[in-house]
Image (cartoon, rainbow, N blue to C red; front, side, top):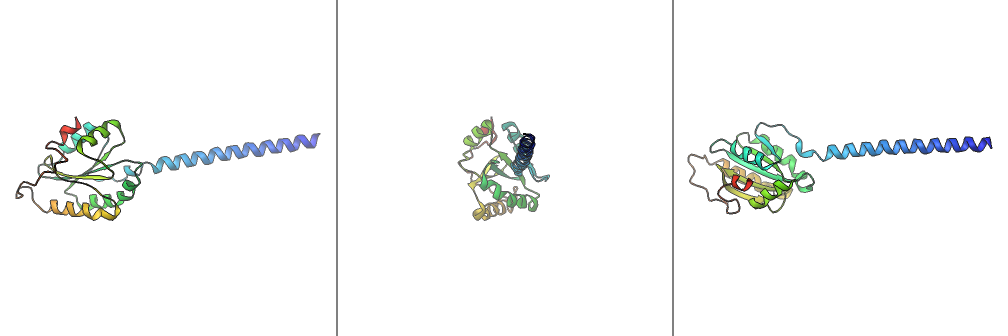
Length: 181
């Protein structure tokens, strides 16, 4: 009888050890997933603003200097295409210090409504803006990132004071900040 009790006690200890180990592994997995889901928070550049609300969106657009080119990147943390494109976006931020970059996290109902009003219909989505006027609006991915760079270069090379009025992108509307109300 005593042998059975010892055997049962050992079995219980093994089960408890297994449960502790399982909880430990689950905790590590949750922490890794948590850290992994914040990929978009990386980067600390003076010309980069992260936006989570419509009020922040309006403030970010208003912070652009007169004539300054603004590139807006609409993304969602769960969007794999956004995540894959993010390192390239960071490179553009670093290589274009005179451009204001705005990252708009669309993962809230408030921002979903704003994005819908702005014509954002897929992710990742980009808009180029100068003085509140939309210059271009398009989607891009790793294979078409050159389109973002080309648009950025085309609109960066034209000084605002010498430029003839650029045609406005009809999907953006005259007032970008009006859609954020």
